[in-house]
Image (tube, rainbow, N blue to C red; front, top):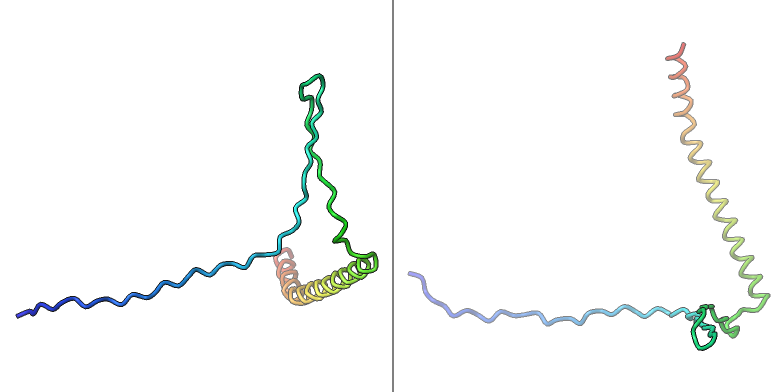
Length: 109
């Protein structure tokens, strides 16, 4: 005969707070300026132009040249590695190409 038992309280896991994403550094926004031309009390044209950003964050010419040289060195290294990869690919494909050429010549003769 089945016995009735009182339901036991279920343990619930406590909720963990959602992890927030770290806020990234915001790029400075370039502000826009709208100039409206009026003629005899009526708006004739609206022109929106970009406002020149502050020069406070510009780097010095020597740092700029150093940056260019570093980027060029990185570019040269990447091109060198690309050429190495291409040469590996060509050396891998060469025997298969030679085999295919022999096979095609055998068909045509």
